[in-house]
Length: 187
Image (tube, rainbow, N blue to C red; front, top):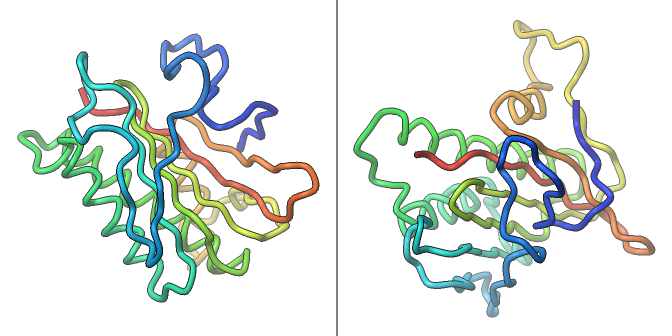
């Protein structure tokens, strides 16, 4: 099931699995100049023992074709951070999982929440976090019971199966929400 956390993005709270992120909260926000071009908030070195948290943001304001745009943006971040190209099938599968989850989150915002406003991707040595902000009031959840043979309604089920955790953040007195998902980084 989904997790709705009372704490802000980047503060993953106590994680017994050791998948906690950087102490002290979220990664620094990246600037998004006019036109939706993203600028990395940290150096573009791959996350690792010497690399810190990486962050990218993409604004969807006045954009069309937002699902392919989000996938291309995410794919470029994965190249810049050293996830792609890959040397092993496991690393390629991890990158494909990230691209699939981005597609599902952005598609859900298009179908159920008046479209996405912002995509934020942060990555540290252990976790990549995807956040899609929209103006919708609904609460995403996997369809139950899940009917694998029926068309549609599989988005949040896919997110739930591929991710370490996912949830929804809402700010008081602000319309909309942020749907977030976290996946483990490849070893």
